[in-house]
Length: 115
Length: 115
Image (tube, rainbow over all chains, first blue to last red):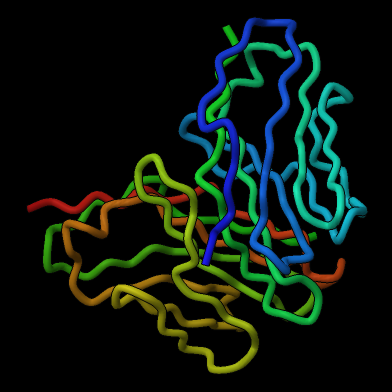
């Protein structure tokens, strides 16, 4: 079956521009996660969704970052007024959700470069 | 709050030698624990998981890990390294005190395999 997909795979943008990153989870997965992976760093938790709601937004680095999920499926991570320090790989993952083992299935990531 | 510590950001072994990647966690409740592997330019994939059943967990590609509550450890091992094992490995813990969705990842250990 289809895995988690993310688009675009690569994005180069100028400092100050807004970007939108998209994630299509595995069908039927109720939980969706966004992480950021900077060069040589581990995974930084950004936000997770249970259905369309986001109980924990504590990982979002600043108010320039926002995310939404519609129809319990596709999610969009938006970064406004991008800064060079936003350059990283943004990973999306999904899982079956509550009552399961919470193992996550990851997409290939979007590599964001802010020039 | 949950946390994960991976000892050693880089580990180098010879082909055929034992692989040992160390992971210690802190958790206020019995955790779910995971090892994920990330090959170059790919997303993460699940290697194995511990969900309070057997303490010795077997995963894909000959890897296994043992949950030791007294040592708060979940070290990953493989008896004989193969060149294809070269990758980055992440230990992770699900925060069951907050419903299990938030997963905390370690900083990662990059495994090098020498011929």
